Length: 436
Image (cartoon, rainbow, N blue to C red; front, side, top):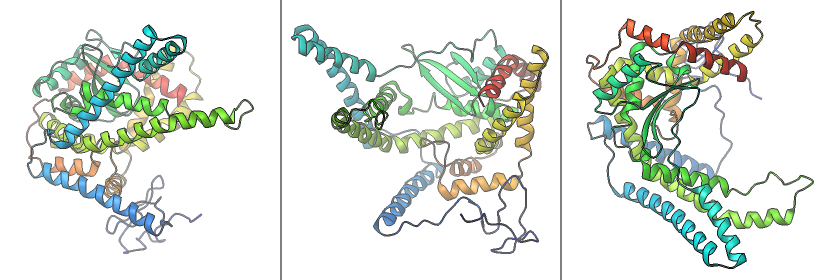
């Protein structure tokens, strides 16, 4: 194994001799020449036609992403279009729903009119149709759900952001332990659900929190078809098709394994599995541009609501997910070793987890934060496959004209929100400590 590259003894870059800032917690790198910007990178040993195909595919993907960025940063409308790709995606979704309806109707007909064998097939078909049916999502009522009576100030802030963007007041706010935030609709009535992850919320400035709310509520008004009932439910159904038809290897090699049965099931499932995989791949491809365009628009709405500086601050924080995970795991292990003599002292210990997390993240040097944006540019990394690369989102925000925020939050208002979240913060910390 090759040892990690290091700076020279006098703290200079071995490539260009520029000064290299050192922090033992993070990799040393040179901001002047990008030496060691990715300390985990290895020289690829793949050569020949396969390597050329991989490189060509990466170059093509980069070109598509950068072309879309040039369009949206140049003033092109960010609202998702209704072109050929959109029509193809909606057609695939229609085919998914049609197959489910046909399977249900055909199985029901066999069950009513067939003999014993065909009725058994009908029962199996109905069971399969039930498993792969499009789901509307269940409106949650769990330990992380807060009512308006429990958090009136948090709901008030969310309502102000939604109103500024022309959206409806949120139906439910959930506050969870995760490093994330999301907005969606659930149930037959398509009620809106805003989810706030405390591991992210706790690290944001008050105005950056407004920016995150602006981005999430932006998804409710930006016409993103991926989040619509037709396309979203079809995508979820395809994922279940893919999982259910995956030939299982769990029983192979065990004492009860039947090799003949394994082969039969593999043969029966491989074709529908490959079809589901192809459909998912095509659906992702046809919705990628419009999906990323919708993300850029949500960022623009975030800027309008909270200011460019606040939106950039929120993006900077989202780049620190790996450090957040590492810190929480380390703190959870330390907290589990503590002995609290009362429920009150245990709650105080739980709440201290968030303070320790804030202090650790605040101590990350600026050079490390910059390195992570450089990594995003190098590898085109993003929050997930649906989002544009984070460095391009940050570049777009940087081009927006500085102006006052449309929604601001006062210190007394934020203090009231923090008070409303005290119990759920302690509960989330306890979950992290006991499971982390």
